Each structure stands twice: as C-alpha cells, then as structure tokens.
Image 1 (cartoon, one colour):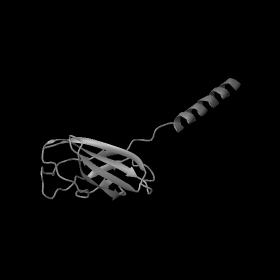
Image 2 (tube, one colour):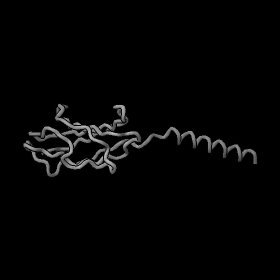
Image 3 (tube, helix red, strand yellow):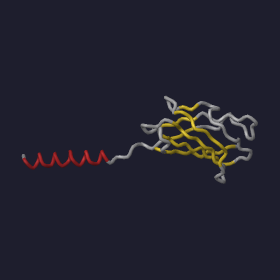
Image 4 (cartoon, one colour):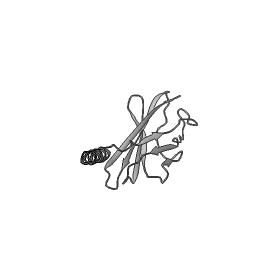
Length: 125
C-alpha cells in the first residue's frame, strides 16, 4: 500500500511540474488580401484576426513587409476586445508588384515591452 501511495505522489508531482513548464499558445495572425488592389491610391488594410494575445497586452503594432523585407508602413492600435482589427485600420503603402508580402504584429504592454509577435506571409497579386 505504501508503494502505491508513493507512486501516486510521484506521478502527481511530476505531472504538476510538467504542467508548470508547458508553453503558452503562441500568438496567431490571420488575414486575406481579397478586396485589396495593387497600387491602390487609397489602400485599405485587410481585416486582421489576432489570437492567443498574451495577458497584459494593451496595444498591437502592425507592419507590412515587402518580399525584399522593405517596411511598407503600419500602425499601432489599441487591443480590440475580440481580437479583430477592422478593414482599413492600418495605414500602409500598397504593393504595386505582385509577390509574397508579410504582415507582422507585436503585442505590446503599457510600458512598450513586446510580449509576443506573429507574422503571416501571403501572395498578393
């Protein structure tokens, strides 16, 4: 009986220890280029869905990167309650050449510290 109790205690302790080392889910970003036109004079950014935003985040910083890594603009916005940033909320220079473009986002706390980041590259034609 003592051996079963000891085995149970070891399992509980190890299980609790491994749970404390478990990583939090990574922040995610999703969007679509549908409705966005190449070289549009007044571009509207896509709607963004940001998930698994860490606790303490007060702001999201977005940036659009060209296939060569050039910064095409972005914006810092207050964290939306539902994780959805509406179409047109982020200012950027619209791509004039088709290619693989990357939107990146950082979750930032009240002190400006980056808590997490995510990025997603999609073709734009």
